[in-house]
Length: 434
Image (cartoon, rainbow, N blue to C red; front, side, top):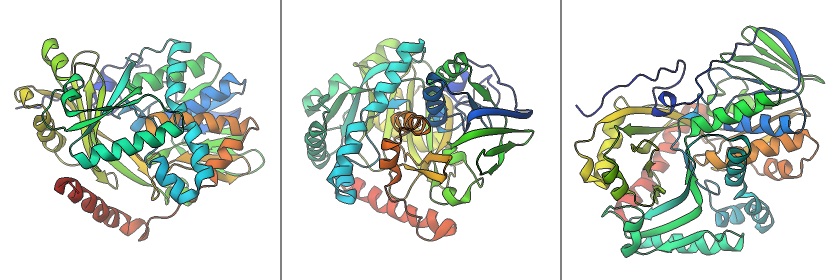
């Protein structure tokens, strides 16, 4: 057996290494009865908690209602990699929306990582923050694409990217699979659940209130919207909808324009420190350049955390390790006898354009979702922008909300098979080296 199921001792979370190693396992109260606030935020993931902290720092009274636990969704289950930019590069954004919009989004593209680092420092959040990321290339074509990507990024002020030759790959990852790559000194990795929990505690230190196990059942728009939960309600001046892939059927007018997609992650048992340091000597996080990519990194307790694979529609494979472990062993054959202690999945929200979707449902009900796999940094940026908009500074919000967001072809019934066909095609190109 290579997989040993571990308990998280953290009720309500996925059976992940993150939940088991979370520094704050307190359960917040359920919302009972009606309360009032300046702003009610639906969802206690990165977007919602980032917005709550921005608003609390500005002096607003904030209530966050969460259906499960803080960081229950993708925010507390992801690979923990600080990857700058968006799910589509700035060249693609310029081609779609024009150079002006690309320049404005480019000016914001490094901000998410800065927000994370600033808050970690300001609030003393212990989340295993490590700087540095490596993008690994399987083919010379991928290397050339990275070179073009680097040149374009430099035009937007990102000078932390450096190309890596095949001879230099071993400085970052000891694997024979790669022909080169690129490092991002402004990238990095964190324990994401501890990050969101630390920011939630910061919100509470500024008198913000967070209620867990308080699923929203309806949102009544109006001059003072009313957000109803199973046992309570929040009357507020503004509502921010930040449920992302876990929004469900609450607001079909926006839920129908994103699709939940699952990604699978596993964590090994603690590995001999000399071995794990030899395999990943710089302690950078790594992701490869394939369309359906693998990503991995060392943890603070010397495990290898390895993720990859996708399930459109949020469907999970029956055996997570059977999907991920073979890829891990192709990368690191030395780990053949290493046991897997944890395996889990989580959903992120995908949009058809692969660009986040922000907008208004009314004058005082805003939403943000659909970070499409680049959520760790982007959610922090967009949460801050939601807070700015409530405070009367909607210039950046209006840039994002002006971007067209399209429904998936085939509607809810056929969006999964149509998307799978596209993913199959790009996956085939990766396998053929095209």
